[in-house]
Length: 95
Image (cartoon, rainbow, N blue to C red; front, side):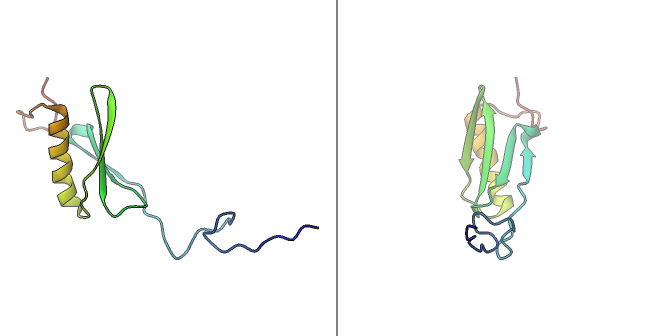
């Protein structure tokens, strides 16, 4: 009979989650009418953003830990990426 190695929680091969490092829920915040997504990866303290522009997916790190600051950076990045203004003020792309 083969000898089985005893594993600790969170270790590869263990069926138990690591109790010492709870994982963040991956919550996606939709901004700019849903055209811009803001989220935080489990492995980073910084907020990331993503958008599809011209049929291509783009991602960007805001390099901000604060959600409010990350929102401002993400919106500025998105407006720069799209090259379009939002004259109606409702967050939808003008077109």
